[in-house]
Image (cartoon, rainbow, N blue to C red; front, side, top):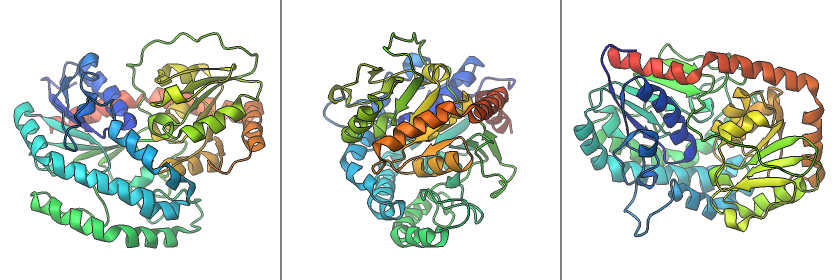
Length: 424
């Protein structure tokens, strides 16, 4: 720990994954005696102060007339673009990935004056951002800047690894074509954003990148899945094999009828907004002999569970995963790394962004199965469940990986890096 308490300003992306990641790291720092302030998006009001943090929140768009749920903007976005998830990852570049970047850019521009005012009020010793886009105020504040990558680490590009968002295999198949399509669909937007960033006094962005690296850089991904051999990183980078928050409420397992294995099913707070997909998966799981805990998400009232299931809108995921035998997930980075942290095999049903990359990596490294989210046959999902549950060698291997991940204690490693860079 540093000799004097620090003031640490966190700015996470509004979605649950990055915010929960920052909550986990921030909680360690708070308990070490530091002042931790969150410049989160305004819909998180009250949720972070309840955990002991200061809130100095921002609007990423003109405030809504009615109070919104945390991360509501992205829930609405996902719901409205759900039909596009049936397309290939290359097709999604124009219809999903580019619109997400456009929304992120609009938010960065809108909140820039707010961030400058927050920095003036808070006077942080160090700024920590967990997002995919740069906010010029954060990198021009005159204090150390820490970047966190809590998406799949293909976000940090290199010639020896597949392009991000592609879900392509590690053997190079399709890489050049996907990169060319990314350039075609994104260059004009990137050039305009880069010009605005420079106008705000920040350095120019790297080629076709939307965020600057920090004075220190952290990424969340277990070594068992990582790409370190194909894309080495310099000394400013540190890997957190996991970053599992310790703030989730305690959980008592309810009585779920059945005698089969216990399985956790979650498409994340965003993916679960696709009610049609949730209902399809639930209908298949209902015909298996197993028991299920289901994270129902924001449209929980529209989702009816079967007799062999229990679920709720929000569930304490980090308390549930240790109890189950298998995880069925959309492949969000938080759920993927948490499943590995607790040594659980996965079935991955990716929808968008880095979920395809995580699904591909879990399968090619032998820790689970990637299925076609909208094209799988009922028997494919049922067979994948039985195969993973019955694979004793796999279960032993993923549990061994989990033990090593837990030993490395990513939360405290992250806190150490933040303290060290602030001390410099």
